[in-house]
Image (cartoon, rainbow, N blue to C red; front, side, top):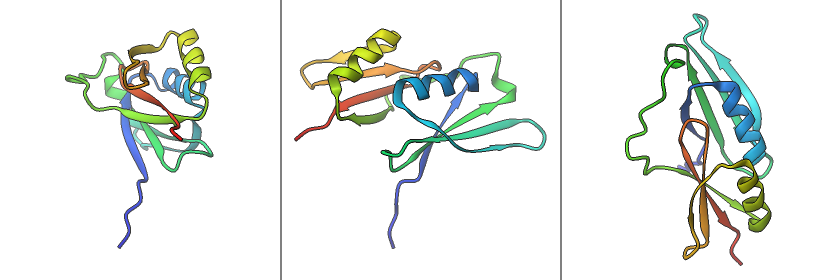
Length: 124
């Protein structure tokens, strides 16, 4: 029996805003979508050619008027990048860097809903 990572889900308040962020910040684009017949939710799965998994963005129609409670926000996604300096410059220009840890050689960006994403350099 073999398990392979497929996707992770995060709920977003404004799907369009999140789609723009994930494409600009991480090069992730929609690969499939699903919507409830009653309009209660919409799912969009994001990926790129380099990632072996997908992020599922879920927009719940009954939650568009308030932010999600992320608790202490200790969970996060992490991406490796082959050009760490260029990624850092891009994210700094976007104004989405929320925490840097130079001692560990990583930094975090924050998406429009407050989720943190760790950016890690490829290590050789």
